[in-house]
Image (cartoon, rainbow over all chains, first blue to last red; front, side, top):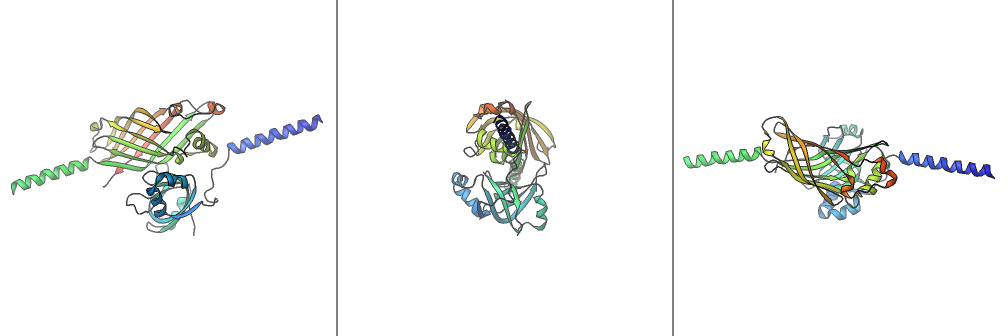
Amino acid sequence: MKKSLVFLVVVIALAGGAFAYLQYNKPHRDTADEQAAYILSAPTLFAEYELEEAAANTKYLDKLLLVKGELASVTTAADGTTSLMLTTEDPISGISVQLLPGEEEKLAAYEVGDEIGIKGICTGKLMDVVLVRGVIIEE
Amino acid sequence: MKKLLILVVLLAGVIVQAQAQGKFYTRDGHISFFSSTDVEDIDAHNNKVASVLDVATGQLEFAVLMKAFEFKKALMQEHFNENYVESDKFPKAQFKGKVLSIGSVDFKKDGEYPVQVEGELTIKDVTKPIRTDARLIIKNGVPQGVTAFTIKPADYNIQIPSVVRKNIAEEIQVKVEMPYQALNK
Protein backbone atom coordinates (compact mmCIF):
# COMPACT_ATOMS: atom_id res chain seq x y z
CA MET A 1 0.00 0.00 0.00
CA LYS A 2 2.76 2.44 1.03
CA LYS A 3 4.87 1.57 -2.03
CA SER A 4 2.07 2.35 -4.46
CA LEU A 5 1.37 5.62 -2.64
CA VAL A 6 5.01 6.69 -2.88
CA PHE A 7 5.00 5.69 -6.55
CA LEU A 8 1.88 7.77 -7.17
CA VAL A 9 3.38 10.82 -5.45
CA VAL A 10 6.56 10.50 -7.52
CA VAL A 11 4.57 10.23 -10.76
CA ILE A 12 2.51 13.30 -9.88
CA ALA A 13 5.66 15.24 -8.94
CA LEU A 14 7.33 14.27 -12.22
CA ALA A 15 4.23 15.15 -14.20
CA GLY A 16 4.03 18.50 -12.42
CA GLY A 17 7.71 19.14 -13.10
CA ALA A 18 7.32 18.22 -16.76
CA PHE A 19 4.30 20.49 -17.11
CA ALA A 20 6.12 23.40 -15.48
CA TYR A 21 9.14 22.86 -17.74
CA LEU A 22 6.99 22.72 -20.88
CA GLN A 23 5.05 25.82 -19.84
CA TYR A 24 8.23 27.76 -19.13
CA ASN A 25 9.59 26.80 -22.52
CA LYS A 26 6.31 26.96 -24.41
CA PRO A 27 6.68 28.10 -28.00
CA HIS A 28 5.40 31.35 -29.45
CA ARG A 29 2.20 31.18 -31.50
CA ASP A 30 2.82 29.51 -34.83
CA THR A 31 1.36 32.09 -37.17
CA ALA A 32 2.08 29.90 -40.20
CA ASP A 33 0.06 26.94 -38.87
CA GLU A 34 -2.64 28.72 -36.88
CA GLN A 35 -5.89 29.46 -38.67
CA ALA A 36 -6.63 33.15 -39.16
CA ALA A 37 -9.53 34.55 -37.15
CA TYR A 38 -10.36 37.01 -39.95
CA ILE A 39 -9.58 37.30 -43.66
CA LEU A 40 -9.78 40.81 -45.05
CA SER A 41 -8.20 43.40 -47.33
CA ALA A 42 -5.69 45.99 -46.14
CA PRO A 43 -7.96 48.98 -46.95
CA THR A 44 -10.87 47.36 -45.10
CA LEU A 45 -8.81 46.68 -41.97
CA PHE A 46 -7.45 50.23 -41.94
CA ALA A 47 -10.89 51.75 -42.52
CA GLU A 48 -12.31 49.87 -39.52
CA TYR A 49 -9.53 51.25 -37.32
CA GLU A 50 -10.02 54.75 -38.69
CA LEU A 51 -13.74 54.59 -38.03
CA GLU A 52 -13.50 53.53 -34.41
CA GLU A 53 -10.26 52.38 -32.89
CA ALA A 54 -11.68 50.95 -29.67
CA ALA A 55 -14.21 48.80 -31.53
CA ALA A 56 -11.55 47.62 -33.97
CA ASN A 57 -9.27 46.69 -31.07
CA THR A 58 -12.02 44.71 -29.38
CA LYS A 59 -12.46 42.81 -32.61
CA TYR A 60 -8.86 42.41 -33.83
CA LEU A 61 -6.37 42.91 -30.98
CA ASP A 62 -4.25 39.80 -30.46
CA LYS A 63 -6.09 37.96 -33.23
CA LEU A 64 -4.35 36.31 -36.17
CA LEU A 65 -5.42 38.15 -39.33
CA LEU A 66 -4.98 37.11 -42.96
CA VAL A 67 -4.64 40.39 -44.85
CA LYS A 68 -4.39 40.83 -48.60
CA GLY A 69 -3.20 44.02 -50.20
CA GLU A 70 -0.84 45.88 -52.43
CA LEU A 71 2.83 45.85 -51.40
CA ALA A 72 3.75 49.48 -50.78
CA SER A 73 7.26 49.15 -49.35
CA VAL A 74 9.77 46.95 -47.59
CA THR A 75 12.05 48.17 -44.82
CA THR A 76 14.79 46.58 -42.77
CA ALA A 77 15.38 47.70 -39.19
CA ALA A 78 18.82 48.13 -37.64
CA ASP A 79 18.56 44.72 -35.96
CA GLY A 80 17.81 43.00 -39.28
CA THR A 81 14.05 42.65 -38.82
CA THR A 82 12.16 43.08 -42.09
CA SER A 83 8.79 44.83 -42.27
CA LEU A 84 6.47 45.42 -45.17
CA MET A 85 3.72 47.96 -45.68
CA LEU A 86 0.40 47.32 -47.40
CA THR A 87 -1.37 50.19 -49.17
CA THR A 88 -4.59 51.61 -47.81
CA GLU A 89 -6.72 54.55 -48.91
CA ASP A 90 -4.74 56.79 -46.59
CA PRO A 91 -1.79 58.43 -48.39
CA ILE A 92 0.63 58.18 -45.45
CA SER A 93 -0.52 55.22 -43.40
CA GLY A 94 -0.98 51.56 -44.12
CA ILE A 95 -0.85 48.07 -42.65
CA SER A 96 2.64 47.57 -41.23
CA VAL A 97 3.67 43.92 -40.96
CA GLN A 98 6.77 42.88 -39.04
CA LEU A 99 7.93 39.60 -40.59
CA LEU A 100 9.29 36.59 -38.75
CA PRO A 101 13.00 35.94 -39.43
CA GLY A 102 13.41 34.06 -42.71
CA GLU A 103 10.13 35.28 -44.26
CA GLU A 104 11.91 38.10 -46.06
CA GLU A 105 13.38 35.55 -48.48
CA LYS A 106 9.89 35.07 -49.91
CA LEU A 107 9.88 38.75 -50.88
CA ALA A 108 12.24 37.99 -53.76
CA ALA A 109 9.14 36.90 -55.71
CA TYR A 110 7.38 40.24 -55.18
CA GLU A 111 7.75 43.80 -56.42
CA VAL A 112 6.29 46.99 -55.04
CA GLY A 113 2.76 47.24 -56.41
CA ASP A 114 2.14 43.47 -56.41
CA GLU A 115 -0.75 41.92 -54.53
CA ILE A 116 0.49 40.00 -51.51
CA GLY A 117 -1.17 38.02 -48.72
CA ILE A 118 0.17 37.87 -45.18
CA LYS A 119 -0.84 36.48 -41.79
CA GLY A 120 0.07 38.35 -38.63
CA ILE A 121 -1.05 39.08 -35.09
CA CYS A 122 -2.75 42.45 -34.68
CA THR A 123 -1.23 44.70 -32.01
CA GLY A 124 -3.27 47.85 -32.65
CA LYS A 125 -2.85 51.14 -34.47
CA LEU A 126 -0.39 53.99 -34.15
CA MET A 127 0.20 55.71 -37.51
CA ASP A 128 -0.40 52.34 -39.19
CA VAL A 129 -2.22 49.21 -38.12
CA VAL A 130 0.63 47.01 -36.87
CA LEU A 131 0.80 43.24 -37.29
CA VAL A 132 3.65 41.19 -35.82
CA ARG A 133 5.06 37.65 -36.27
CA GLY A 134 4.08 38.02 -39.93
CA VAL A 135 4.34 35.27 -42.52
CA ILE A 136 3.83 35.61 -46.27
CA ILE A 137 1.11 33.39 -47.72
CA GLU A 138 2.26 31.41 -50.70
CA GLU A 139 -0.54 31.33 -53.26
CA MET B 1 9.74 96.28 -59.34
CA LYS B 2 12.73 96.52 -57.00
CA LYS B 3 10.38 96.25 -53.98
CA LEU B 4 8.82 93.09 -55.45
CA LEU B 5 12.28 91.57 -56.00
CA ILE B 6 13.31 92.29 -52.40
CA LEU B 7 10.06 90.76 -51.17
CA VAL B 8 10.59 87.61 -53.24
CA VAL B 9 14.17 87.21 -51.96
CA LEU B 10 13.01 87.70 -48.38
CA LEU B 11 10.19 85.19 -48.82
CA ALA B 12 12.58 82.67 -50.38
CA GLY B 13 14.81 83.13 -47.35
CA VAL B 14 11.90 82.46 -45.01
CA ILE B 15 10.86 79.34 -46.92
CA VAL B 16 14.41 77.96 -46.93
CA GLN B 17 14.62 78.68 -43.21
CA ALA B 18 11.32 76.89 -42.60
CA GLN B 19 12.60 73.84 -44.49
CA ALA B 20 15.75 73.73 -42.38
CA GLN B 21 13.41 73.47 -39.38
CA GLY B 22 10.40 71.20 -39.79
CA LYS B 23 9.13 67.92 -38.55
CA PHE B 24 10.64 64.46 -38.49
CA TYR B 25 8.93 61.18 -37.85
CA THR B 26 9.49 57.48 -37.63
CA ARG B 27 7.16 54.47 -37.60
CA ASP B 28 10.02 52.04 -36.95
CA GLY B 29 11.46 53.38 -33.70
CA HIS B 30 13.05 50.82 -31.41
CA ILE B 31 12.41 50.53 -27.69
CA SER B 32 13.81 47.71 -25.61
CA PHE B 33 13.71 47.05 -21.91
CA PHE B 34 15.90 44.89 -19.75
CA SER B 35 15.50 43.44 -16.29
CA SER B 36 18.34 41.68 -14.51
CA THR B 37 18.08 39.69 -11.30
CA ASP B 38 19.96 36.79 -9.72
CA VAL B 39 17.19 34.48 -10.93
CA GLU B 40 17.04 35.50 -14.58
CA ASP B 41 17.50 38.21 -17.21
CA ILE B 42 14.50 39.35 -19.18
CA ASP B 43 14.58 41.52 -22.27
CA ALA B 44 11.99 42.60 -24.79
CA HIS B 45 12.14 44.52 -28.06
CA ASN B 46 9.65 46.66 -29.95
CA ASN B 47 10.51 47.78 -33.49
CA LYS B 48 7.28 49.56 -34.26
CA VAL B 49 7.43 52.71 -32.19
CA ALA B 50 5.90 55.78 -33.84
CA SER B 51 7.40 59.15 -33.04
CA VAL B 52 7.28 62.75 -34.20
CA LEU B 53 9.93 65.39 -33.52
CA ASP B 54 9.28 69.07 -34.24
CA VAL B 55 12.67 70.68 -34.59
CA ALA B 56 11.29 74.22 -34.43
CA THR B 57 9.79 73.78 -30.95
CA GLY B 58 11.66 70.71 -29.68
CA GLN B 59 8.35 68.92 -29.15
CA LEU B 60 8.77 65.19 -29.06
CA GLU B 61 6.11 62.49 -28.90
CA PHE B 62 6.19 58.77 -29.20
CA ALA B 63 3.62 56.01 -28.96
CA VAL B 64 4.20 52.29 -28.38
CA LEU B 65 1.91 49.31 -28.89
CA MET B 66 2.42 47.06 -25.85
CA LYS B 67 1.52 43.89 -27.75
CA ALA B 68 4.35 44.54 -30.18
CA PHE B 69 7.01 43.83 -27.52
CA GLU B 70 8.73 40.56 -28.42
CA PHE B 71 10.24 38.37 -25.70
CA LYS B 72 12.37 35.29 -26.28
CA LYS B 73 10.13 33.30 -23.99
CA ALA B 74 6.47 33.08 -25.03
CA LEU B 75 5.39 32.53 -21.43
CA MET B 76 7.06 35.78 -20.35
CA GLN B 77 5.35 37.63 -23.20
CA GLU B 78 2.04 36.18 -22.06
CA HIS B 79 2.60 37.20 -18.42
CA PHE B 80 3.73 40.66 -19.52
CA ASN B 81 0.60 41.24 -21.60
CA GLU B 82 -2.01 39.48 -19.49
CA ASN B 83 -0.85 40.19 -15.94
CA TYR B 84 1.66 43.04 -15.79
CA VAL B 85 0.66 45.66 -18.34
CA GLU B 86 -2.83 44.28 -19.11
CA SER B 87 -2.43 45.23 -22.75
CA ASP B 88 -6.02 44.31 -23.64
CA LYS B 89 -7.14 47.20 -21.44
CA PHE B 90 -4.15 49.46 -22.07
CA PRO B 91 -2.85 48.72 -25.57
CA LYS B 92 -0.55 51.76 -25.80
CA ALA B 93 2.12 53.61 -23.88
CA GLN B 94 2.89 57.22 -24.73
CA PHE B 95 5.46 59.89 -24.17
CA LYS B 96 4.77 63.60 -24.66
CA GLY B 97 7.51 66.07 -24.03
CA LYS B 98 10.26 68.23 -25.32
CA VAL B 99 13.89 68.15 -26.30
CA LEU B 100 15.30 70.95 -24.16
CA SER B 101 17.75 73.37 -25.76
CA ILE B 102 17.18 71.93 -29.24
CA GLY B 103 18.48 75.27 -30.47
CA SER B 104 21.97 74.08 -29.51
CA VAL B 105 21.76 71.34 -32.17
CA ASP B 106 23.19 72.34 -35.55
CA PHE B 107 21.21 70.32 -38.09
CA LYS B 108 23.56 71.47 -40.82
CA LYS B 109 26.58 69.90 -39.13
CA ASP B 110 26.84 66.11 -38.82
CA GLY B 111 27.65 64.97 -35.33
CA GLU B 112 26.39 63.86 -31.94
CA TYR B 113 24.70 66.43 -29.78
CA PRO B 114 23.94 65.83 -26.10
CA VAL B 115 20.48 67.07 -25.14
CA GLN B 116 17.99 66.64 -22.33
CA VAL B 117 14.50 65.31 -22.81
CA GLU B 118 11.70 66.17 -20.43
CA GLY B 119 8.08 65.14 -20.48
CA GLU B 120 5.43 62.73 -19.32
CA LEU B 121 5.37 58.98 -19.80
CA THR B 122 2.03 57.20 -19.63
CA ILE B 123 1.79 53.46 -19.07
CA LYS B 124 -1.40 51.70 -17.99
CA ASP B 125 -3.10 55.12 -17.90
CA VAL B 126 -0.66 56.26 -15.18
CA THR B 127 1.32 59.38 -16.13
CA LYS B 128 4.66 60.22 -14.53
CA PRO B 129 7.16 62.96 -15.29
CA ILE B 130 10.41 61.88 -16.85
CA ARG B 131 13.66 63.71 -17.48
CA THR B 132 16.64 62.08 -19.10
CA ASP B 133 19.84 62.75 -20.98
CA ALA B 134 19.76 61.87 -24.66
CA ARG B 135 21.75 62.26 -27.85
CA LEU B 136 20.66 63.60 -31.22
CA ILE B 137 22.90 62.15 -33.92
CA ILE B 138 22.71 64.32 -37.02
CA LYS B 139 23.58 62.93 -40.43
CA ASN B 140 22.81 64.89 -43.59
CA GLY B 141 20.36 67.09 -41.71
CA VAL B 142 18.38 64.12 -40.37
CA PRO B 143 18.35 63.28 -36.66
CA GLN B 144 18.48 59.96 -34.86
CA GLY B 145 17.39 60.11 -31.22
CA VAL B 146 19.06 57.83 -28.67
CA THR B 147 18.42 57.63 -24.96
CA ALA B 148 18.37 55.25 -22.01
CA PHE B 149 16.61 55.58 -18.67
CA THR B 150 15.18 53.45 -15.89
CA ILE B 151 11.61 53.11 -14.72
CA LYS B 152 10.04 51.40 -11.74
CA PRO B 153 7.12 49.11 -12.70
CA ALA B 154 5.49 49.93 -9.35
CA ASP B 155 5.25 53.60 -10.37
CA TYR B 156 2.92 52.64 -13.20
CA ASN B 157 0.67 50.33 -11.25
CA ILE B 158 2.43 47.27 -12.68
CA GLN B 159 1.94 44.67 -9.97
CA ILE B 160 4.39 41.81 -9.90
CA PRO B 161 2.99 38.75 -8.06
CA SER B 162 5.08 37.72 -5.06
CA VAL B 163 5.64 34.29 -6.67
CA VAL B 164 7.85 35.88 -9.35
CA ARG B 165 8.92 38.98 -7.40
CA LYS B 166 12.56 37.86 -7.41
CA ASN B 167 12.53 37.25 -11.19
CA ILE B 168 11.88 40.87 -12.10
CA ALA B 169 14.04 43.81 -11.15
CA GLU B 170 12.64 46.75 -9.14
CA GLU B 171 14.02 49.07 -11.80
CA ILE B 172 13.80 48.27 -15.50
CA GLN B 173 16.35 49.64 -17.95
CA VAL B 174 14.78 51.15 -21.06
CA LYS B 175 16.66 51.93 -24.29
CA VAL B 176 15.23 54.09 -27.06
CA GLU B 177 16.48 54.52 -30.64
CA MET B 178 14.48 56.64 -33.06
CA PRO B 179 15.80 56.84 -36.64
CA TYR B 180 13.82 59.79 -37.99
CA GLN B 181 13.02 60.86 -41.51
CA ALA B 182 11.67 64.14 -42.80
CA LEU B 183 7.91 64.54 -42.69
CA ASN B 184 6.84 65.96 -46.04
CA LYS B 185 3.44 67.54 -45.66
